Length: 126
Image (cartoon, rainbow, N blue to C red):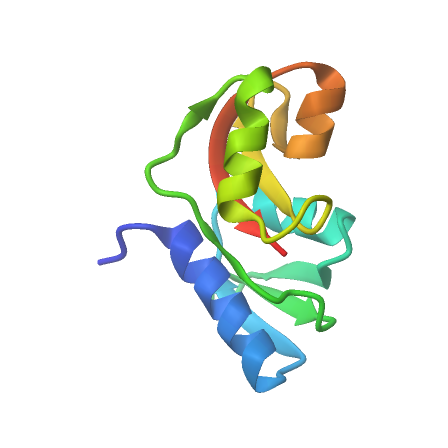
């Protein structure tokens, strides 16, 4: 029984990157699909597709993920308090990004700052 599928997916991606694989397979869910879409838009993964036979996403990697993971507990963050969590989870300013769940969907902290909204922290990627 899996308690946190997003953590399992990000851990699988991180481990596949570390050993130099070009592809990996992660469990499929709506949340994981949206997080993978954000990672693809930011250039961290090349692409991903849903495979119907095993109910999983096949993720094509491009070697741009140094570290990724979920943020537990999922802190609620206001637009003014984002810098505190950036300093806590990211190694340097403008290096990597946080992924948030907002009323506008799953977006990065930079997009949330542009929109002037807050949300719940889901993950970090750098």
